Image 1 (cartoon, rainbow, N blue to C red):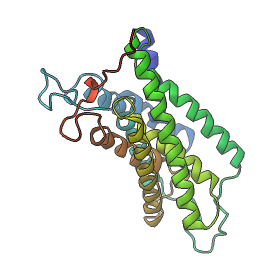
Image 2 (image 1 turned 120 degrees about the vertical axis):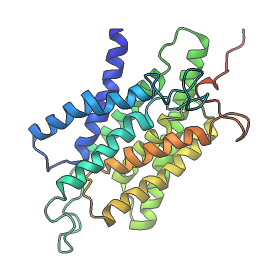
Image 3 (image 1 turned 30 degrees about the vertical axis):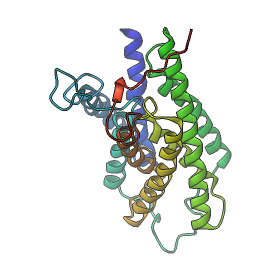
Image 4 (image 1 turned 90 degrees about the vertical axis):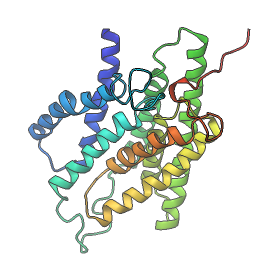
Length: 274
C-alpha cells in the first residue's frame, strides 16, 4: 500500500510542479505553497478518483459511462492536462511580466539564459519519463507485463523523437534559425502526447502521434502569445494542449480492429513464445 502511495505521490507532485513554469517570476513562494496545497489535496485527487480510482469514468460493468471506460495509461490527461490547465489559469490571473509584450522590448529580452541547462533538463526529464510510463505497468512479474513495458518504452522514445524533430523544422521555417529550446519543448510535448496512449498503440502510431503533437504544441504556443498570456516555458502548450491531444489519441489510434473497436486497457495480448 505504501509503495503504491509513493508511486501516486510522484504523479501528484508532477501535476503541481507543472504550474510553477506557467507563473515563473511572478508568484511569491507563500502563494505558490497555497496553490500546491489546493492542487494536491483537492483538485488532483478528485481527477484521479474519477479515473484511475475506479470512479464514474472508469467504465466496466459497474459503471454507466461505457464498457471500456476512460483510457489514460500514464497520465496525459490526468496528470499533464490537469497541471497544464492550472498553469494556464495561473498565467492568465497573475498577468504578464513587465515589458513581455511591449513592442519596444529587445527581441532577446526574454530569451532563455542557458541552452545547455535546458538540454540537460530535457534529457533528465526524458529519462525519468520511462519510470512514469513503463512504471505504469505496475509490475514486471509476468511475461505480459515485461513485454508491455518494452512496448511502452519504444512508443515513448519514438513519439518524443518525432515531435522534437518536427518542432525543430517548424521553428526553422518560422524563425529561419535552429531553435534548440523549441526542440527541447517539442521533445517534452511528444512525451506528453504519448503518455496516455503508450500502452495501447503501435509503434508507427506513436510516430504519428508525436508528429501531430508538434503542430498542436506550436499552435498552442503561438495562440497564447497572440492572446498575450505570458507562459514563460510554454507549460500549457506542452502539458495542457498536448495532454488533451494524448488523451484523444489513445482512442483514435487504439490497436483495435481498424477504427471499429476500442480495446482500451484490455487491448494488450502480446506474450513471448515458449
